Amino acid sequence: MPRVEISLSQIRENTKKLSELYMQKGISLMGVTKAVLGEPSIAKAMIQGGVKFIADSRIENIQKMKSAGILNQFVLLRTPLSQAESIVKNADISLNTEIETLKNLSYHAKDQNKIHQVIIMVELGDLREGILPYDLPQFIRETLSMPHIKIIGIGCNFACYGGIKPDDKNMRELSELVDLLEKEFHIDLEIISGGNSANFEWFKSSQDVGRVNNLCLGESILLGCETVGRKVIPGLYTGAFQLIAEVIESKRKASVPLGEICQDAFGNVPSFLDRGDHQRVIIALGRQDVQVSNLKSNNNLKIIGSSSDHIILDGENHNLEVGDEIRFSLDYGGLLATMTSPFVIKQFTDSNAHVAA
Ligand SMILES: *Cc1c(COP(=O)(O)O)cnc(C)c1O
Image (cartoon, rainbow, N blue to C red; front, side, top):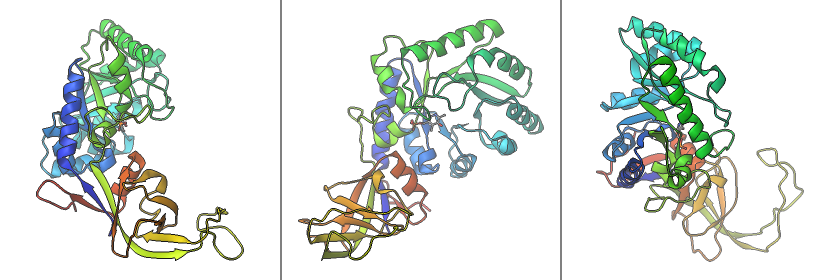
């Protein structure tokens, strides 16, 4: 079976370095676990690295981490109305943009004798979730009238859908909104979340981060890069996740298929360049597990193509035999896909070699 080898110490170190770095300008971090399906050992590594809050987009992942005995505060990043009861039960804080959903959360919070804390998301240009600044005062007013809901913060997100960069201009806009709301409603907003792993460049270059005092980081912690240009953040590990697959065939064959070309398994009509006979290697990994564009071979093996269950590599000059293992680094899409595939074993390499269920 293919496996992902996960270095918990590298994840812990990345979290520690990022926590220290961002704290230099007063920014605390939430560790985002959605890409790893709320894997409890990874959440624990983030906590050891210094994050106090664990954030995830799925309530099921939060339940899993709580069941594993993690006692930290949990933040739900995406809040479906239909899950309000479970959200109040399992998450300490949720991100919100709809009054209807808040009403449901308030109803269940009353029922469960709780105060549910919320971060209100503002739309500042990326066009994913968020309330338009113009509508924000009315939204806050209505939310403040809900006795079982407490607004603890304001947040925004960039580079998620629209690919818009966080910069001094939009971050300043967030800070100004915070000042305005605190003044108008006589409230203190504790958490001002400026975004995610895309905020790195802004953070580095900014003389003044304004009111922003929090970021939710997934990819930077897990893969060691920022996400505006996918540049490595100096001093971080980029290989905490390694995908390993097994060679199941290694043969010299033609580079152009024989016969009349029709559609492949995915409805594309492929074309080929004739490079003569060469060594072709097949590994037991396919599109059901991961897209080849998400993989980078650690020894420069060129990927020729893939189908659902096979990836074909150019094995020329690599001396690969059946049973050999091939290692790949993963990008964020690859991390998501392989962590989600039930066919890929998740193995921790440096903490008592424990294997995840
Ligand atoms: C996924 C997510 C994040 C984390 O994004 P990264 O790019 O992995 O750091 C932060 N905030 C929200 C609201 C998210 O949904």
